[in-house]
Length: 217
Image (cartoon, rainbow, N blue to C red; front, side):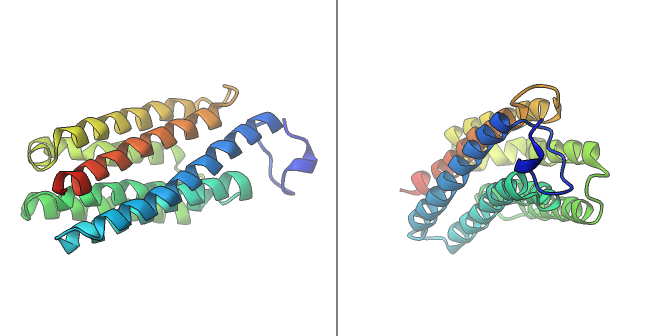
């Protein structure tokens, strides 16, 4: 366990000093890549013919940076409820640019509204009841993340195949990461979990690029 000199008063770390350093490196890398990537993709999308593309990508980058920023803040500054809430923002934000590519109709509008409503419910529970419904939160993350699979046909028709493969790869990485997130006895489990989240985020970032930017180039 980490010594009392390297943790805030009243906080008990579950990780030793080396694990905390490893996790800190992963978070620093994630925030740095996230900032650079967000600026790049917004600039690239700014030239899009459709204003909806630019807006959806801005929403996506806000969700991505919110998740990366609060995750770093939680693990380095202890802001747990905001870190966990930001995951919902990231998931809903990631869905937005892909749903915008679909034909406007009941399916696309309903999916967009549903995703954000579930995210708002999850955020509210995390902010009001921090630490009380952690298992339910994990299930909700997974259900929300894979909910698009229910509408596979209209989603597949609207997206390039490369985006679909990258989305699937990112979803599998996120889901695999959950195993390490709950495997508390494994050394470096937190760093491994956040590493998988970072790689998954890169997959989904590439999927947005392929869908919104490159497909219209």
